[in-house]
Image (cartoon, rainbow, N blue to C red):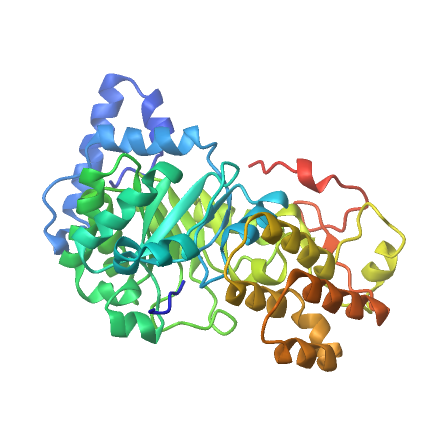
Length: 409
């Protein structure tokens, strides 16, 4: 089995265009075409601007889903159903599956049954595939279209496995193939097609790329604000200005990906980019309650002491992991996925107690009971490393109801 990884020009939104009268709408369309004539999208020699009815359908679908703002990004073996449900419990309003290999998914029933699971509460849902064969991609997508809200094409994976397999961000070198993948799905599926991309080093190339995807039939575009070579998000910050430029150039919904470490970052990103929602990946793995306003913190901080006696506010990573195990019992997934979550959610605790981590690593066959015992061992060391709850402005809050939190802009 191959490893998986985890992918018009009017500056007003469709909602605003819809409020215009016939004359104003015609003027807006004329202005968009004029801008296209002088924009970098001319380099791709695309045939025609995206039809207005397709734009309206893209926005109608997004609005029917409630215009979700807080989205779990696709992650290698780690945005699986139990984790998605945990994130949804703590504020996520939509989620992606891990990237699925379209050829394996189309051809192998065992791969399909083990790698893709969902439930009625797991919506809105993006099901993401990597692909380089339009026919195989369509065959895979037709299996999942009754169970999702978007079929997503991964055009952003920068890892070496993607280079060897000729998919993900390495399809940026073959834009005609990318176009054919999008067109194949757009013409044959009952659900919209979305794409997740990385940016080119040059902004004009990124804009040309985004225009091509929109015109090929993409109904929603998620933009990771790093290039294919910028793989380490801890070293290179995502370029929000590039995401903003894409948002201003397109007329379909645009999501921003990169630099989301806490709820305050969500607000800042939306303000700076104008994006219609944000994706978070690595930060959610350590803190699945990020979208509910919780942050990681230092156990020695004053905030930790302040929360020690607050039952309502107290939440820590072991507690989150135990909640994950409850979802796992209801929605089983391969144990390799679970093992990865143990190390990410409890990694800060293992640094202080490496002997417990070693016991975990020695255990070849995991079980819910064994993992609950690991958490209890950590508890018995009398560690108190709570997450702190902050309001939307980043201030430490003293009262909350995390499950009723509603995101508003």
